[in-house]
Image (cartoon, rainbow, N blue to C red; front, side, top):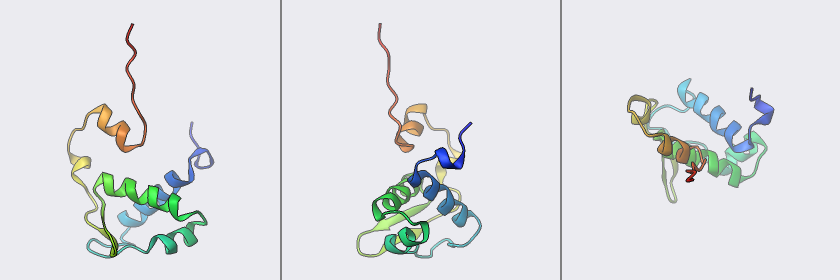
Length: 102
């Protein structure tokens, strides 16, 4: 069983930000706090926050615009309502599936 302390910092930040999105702290259409603000809130580096935000972008929750930061797109991205392949799910989670050939 995976506990919160077993998770990488970027995964914990991702889950917390996602929870904030779903509870309405960051409403649809609103700009997200900057990477610097989030890194201060979480006590982690901007690189860690950027990885968490990139996961949210890949999942379809937010969009990133250079110079404008991140903006909330939706609380229920298409990936929640559509079937995706195992490979796509693993790649989104930064896991790399491999095949064993004998």
